Length: 351
Image 1: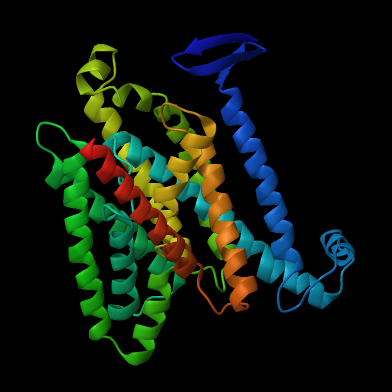
Image 2: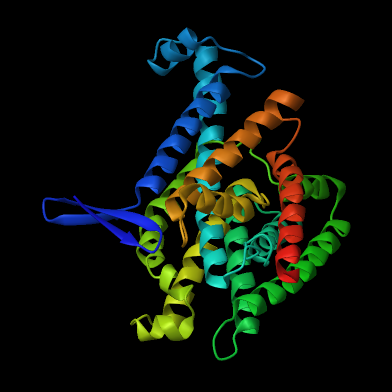
């Protein structure tokens, strides 16, 4: 094991059987602590609710010795819901970390620059206009996110893509798509409008294994690409000229990272609706906890999962089972965080 210093960040290179892996000890510690927190929240989510279980009953159920009712509550209701929360939170955390690093701006989040809203537009169109089912709504969500990303990226491109230009155009596209979503709801029938409005808030209510599988497959396929490409994000943050001098194909790398991030955002939105502020807050807090000078993808994924699962547990236990969608909780907490962030950026700019 070899230890080295890069700036103020300590790295350790672990070698085993001809393979080597660079690890930040502090980042690894943060991920470990967050995984323990996720495990604790998962146990709480499985134990409590309208049908509370004791710890012994939970262990017996997981071992296959529980009653039929206990197995239904654990395996059909609570376990898939918390699994979706963990996977969606992780996907949003990674997506937010990539965009904030690419834009070199803390506001560079998929829900700020239009990708999440585009996914919502695709889903609402399928639900209201075409009367599609769950699979069609998910497909519409993914397609809507991709189209929004193409529009934002295309409008922001001018001899390359600059962070502030991407954010400003993304905010404008978000406003337009939000207005379009509202218009679609006004033209829908009462039942369709209610269903679409619930979906637009972002919710984990009623989520089952059919939502778990697509998100899990997407993470398995996309996460390795994000980690490999993420090694170049540190160089891109130094500026395009510096990154080019260091051998990075800037636009190709940036476009690949955008594709990865949009894919994660679209799949997450398809599974749970446009849950806001997780992609905004998780990467920044994770970077501070890990003491990382660049994007902290794994800590961001772990913290995104922790935040979303904690918000869902809070929503259920304080307001009752299925009464408050998790998107309301994340929006309330995230709104306060966004106000603090904007005030902090404004004060920093004045100095």
